[in-house]
Each structure stands twice: as C-alpha cells, then as structure tokens.
Image (cartoon, rainbow, N blue to C red; front, side, top):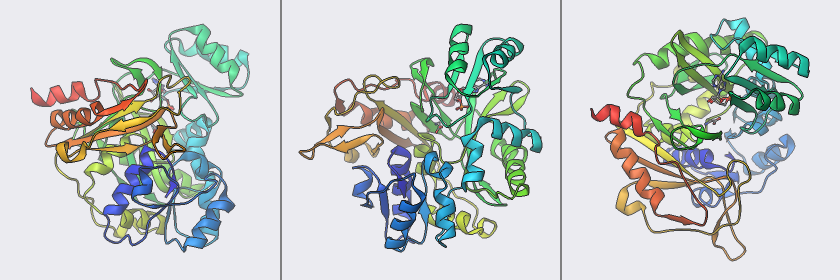
Length: 413
Ligand code: AMP
Ligand code: GLY
C-alpha cells in the first residue's frame, strides 16, 4: 500500500480482513496503518523508489492510494517491471490531473457535465465568468491537492483565483445533491461500488471553505435505486471506453463526483483514486474480500470476479480536523483517546498522525483522524461514529456535527 492517510488506513484494514493476504506492507503509512502492516520509508511519488521497494519485498500487488504518485507515473513503472499495480498509468490519471483533459474526455464520450471553458489569460477568464454568471466555479487546471476549486458568488474572489492559476477551467454551477460513485476498472470492465456522499465544506450547515471532505456516509437512502447502474452506463463505461480508444486503458479506481441536477446526473469531477473520506464508509460495508478484487482490476480479470456483496446497514465517518484546517493546519498537537472500540463497536482511522520523539501520538496533517461507526441504519451508524469522535482529546481539534444528519432523519420518518 502506497500512501499515508485515512483512505489508506481504510484500504489496509480491508486488505487485512482478506484471508488471501499473507503479507502486508505500507509505505510510508502512518501510526494507525503500522499496527496492521509493516511500514517502510518511500518517496511515494518517485516511480523508481516505489519500484525498488516493491521488488525488494517481492510484492504481488501494489495498491497506490493518492493521486500524486499516479500522475507521476508510479503505476507505469511498476507495470514495466512486471509488478501488478492497482492504479492507472500517468496518461490515464490525467483524468484527475488535468480538469481540461477530463472535459475533453467527457465531450468525446458524450458524458453529461457542466458546460465549461478553459482560460489561459485574465481576459479569457473574465469572458467565461461573464458567460456563466454567478455562482462562479473556477478550477485550477493542475493538481492542487483539493485546493484548486473555488465556488463563490463573489466576482472579485473568482477573478483572483483565476489570476493565481496558470490555466483554469471555468464552468456553469451545478445545482443539486452531490454523490461520489467509485468504480473498479481493469481497462475494459468496470464494477461500481456503493454510492456515498461526502461533506466538502468545513462548517456545519455546509458553510465555510471547501475542504478535502469532513465526513461521509453510505449507502444513500434517498438516492434512486438504479443510480449506480445508471452512472455506470452513462458515465463510467463511456469514460473507460474513451481512454481505451486513446491507447491509455484505465486500470484502477475511477471516482465519479456527480451532481444530481434537475436535468439529470452530471459529472462534477473525476478522480483517479479512491475518495477520502468516502472510502472509509464504502469499504466498511464491503463484504467481498478486497485484495482479490484489486488484483483482478490490476490483472484485467474483473469480468471473472464474483458479484460484490455488501453488508446490510450503514456506515458514517466523521473527520477530526486540526486547528486552522483547511487554511493553515496546526501540527504537532498531542492526541489522546480512551479505549473506545470495545464499548461502541466503532473505530478510529488515522489520517494525519505521527509519533512524536517520545512515542506519543501527535497530529501531522489537517485531517487528523476519522471516526467510523456502523449500524443497522444511518441514525445508529452516526451515533456510533460521534461517540468515538467525542472520545478524542486534541487541543484545537474540531469536527462537523451534522454529518449524515439529514439523511438519517429521512430514514427514520
Ligand atoms: P472538484 O475538485 O472539481 O470536485 O470540486 C470541488 C468541489 O467544488 C465539488 O465537490 C463541488 O462541491 C464544488 N464544485 C465543483 N464544480 C462545481 C460545479 N460546476 N457546480 C457546483 N459546485 C461545484
Ligand atoms: N472526498 C473528496 C476526494 O477524495 O476528492
């Protein structure tokens, strides 16, 4: 496993549950992951360094968590060395690495998405902002670690963001609830996972700045039952076919970020990897052993894989963030928690943690921990997740209080 966040901890946890996994290594990992997998140092975005480590370990499968190694060509290098890799080649990962490339693929494949323009100068940006009007949606055309998108009613802010980026995609605002749908892909066959929803804004009531995601839940009790099948047909398969036609087959996880608008499902973004924190809830519900699935995707064998099984009930995750996140997270704060697991049946995943010099657990990133709870329905899953979140003590730590709140009420009524 390559990576070090909450998503990677969730993936490692699911791999650990797979009886086919005999040996599990993580690089660089984090203190939570290190309890489940042997940790190694690696330059995660350096194809040669990752390949060296995989060879040394005799790895049968390398799962690449974050986007930066994918865009840097880590999967290409592993495959060139005959090592199975879960994650697209650099050329296919451009579906996340460049917003304009993603738009090209969508146009070519007839995938529904927001109308957009790519702007390389302030003049072009101003023209596009005028064309689409407020709320303004301005996206950095390069990878920006979750900070590239500004959605604002303030024209000045929209113009400043465009000016700060080399090239931007400016697009029409999409109204309606957002859904994340992940699909495993092996170059031609794609298998959808459970639809999930994340909470992008920092504060309760969807206020505050955009973040990497402050919480998530799955499944979506309010979503149409054929949502995954519909998105597979109209979004995922066409995208994979288009990439295949270009000679850059997509092997790995294709993440479709969707808006359910009044005129149907539209793509907000594609990512080339599992989403964070949606993965934490989706994998909590997965009954099928994960390693076999990821290996089948890497090996081009998904068509022969058994149908996925999902545990009944629901899962919720709440992100515990550091003081100052997302603008300027404070690091190095001590983390303490009581023994929560036995009492609640829920658990904590490590996202941005490290061991201090004396071995104590400290914060090391903006999103520090993920409290995950599950239950027979969303209301009970949510209660379990919050019970764990409340047991964490960290100076300046905070979380949203309304993750899955509306959806849980819908179910109860
Ligand atoms: P992205 O990185 O493209 O997912 O954008 C981050 C977030 O910005 C999305 O999850 C949405 O909440 C918001 N966003 C992006 N594009 C649009 C759009 N066209 N209309 C409305 N909100 C958007
Ligand atoms: N949860 C949003 C993302 O992973 O990009």
